Image 1 (spheres, helix red, strand yellow):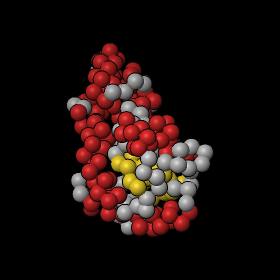
Image 2 (spheres, helix red, strand yellow):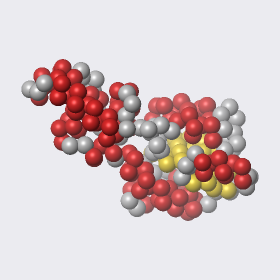
Image 3 (tube, one colour):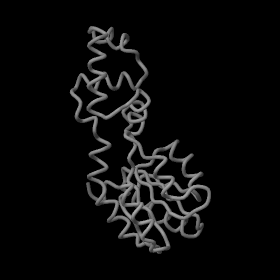
Image 4 (cartoon, one colour):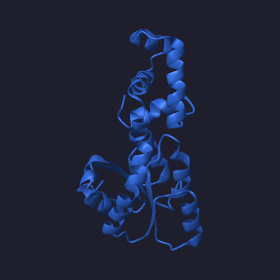
Length: 197
């Protein structure tokens, strides 16, 4: 994926300095499909729950909820956005924690836009591997997956395809194994995130 594909992606800027935030939004909306912004981690959490952006660029030190705590809260088996942390301090302790949390990039302020875009580009192949996992499914597994995401019960799916409910349960088990889901909520969340429902 190259820079042209940025136009298909959504991005969230989290920055407590109003001037910096406005500057980043203004520049980045040229590249990305949609750019949202928040002034702190708590505000960002509400936005993330609603739109699940593909990319999150967050300050580390900010009120209410800091960047590292925010990333810990939102990353899951089914939602792994590209995460870039920014800070005005070249603090090794933060850097080590960010590395342990497998964030995709770490930038010292003031932010160099070209460097930020480069970090995002470098992270895209990993992002695609995680978020396009559904391509591992067979065509019938994918159909069952879509029906489960719509809230259909195994019996309803079985009737729809003239197969046994037990067969649907086998498909469901395979889908969960291949996709790393723990529950139906994981499945639905993944379908919504990838606009598959």
